[in-house]
Length: 296
Ligand SMILES: [Zn+2]
Ligand SMILES: [Zn+2]
Image (cartoon, rainbow, N blue to C red; front, side, top):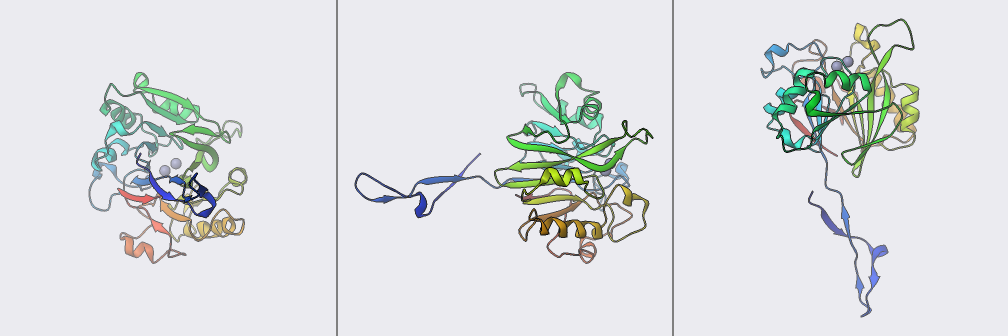
């Protein structure tokens, strides 16, 4: 990675033997691209993937190498947006719903990579990566993560957070599994990846603690609706506004935090980005689009 150097201020200057002030060169990390390859909820018809207005399943590429989720259109999006499969070294899964985890798309991505490259590494809670690897077990390495336990992935410190998004409908609370969100700490600041999930759970809020968030990619399945059944496991704009207020008051969010909305439902958002923008409670928020790049 190319590094930009800049001269640090007087604090870092040193006296040379000749008594001349010389500035010490310091490196600053390069910007990290965050590319939303897919931004839609599961109500899109993915037999029409690639047609105008059809968002792909949610998938995000961090720094060109860490893919978060690879669901129904995961590998198809990699091809569509010209991403080199060899550049993707790791996939981090949030949960096992098919729009986030498709064994077929994972297999296709693994098969497209050069055999000389190290195996694709899969990260996520154990049952999810077991499922993800089921069609290509020999081509991938599985690395289970645990909620609340920080792990190094692609040089980032990644903490899995519990999400208010249930998998399965077991009535036994011990068996009910939740999706994971991720706090990804990078040299350019912290990214909160929060798809899918409704209200942030208290445990997740405590794990974030006083850490500042440079960017949040947030579940905005609903826009302004208050009465859709999906509200129990996804967010609307009002909920995001309330949570942002709390995060601001406690110092994790400030005027510089990028709030990026994703996982928009086909039936709950206007067709055009312009019409969607008019609904935002904060004009600085951004609506993700398939293939668009944000920068950390
Ligand atoms: Zn989803
Ligand atoms: Zn889901």
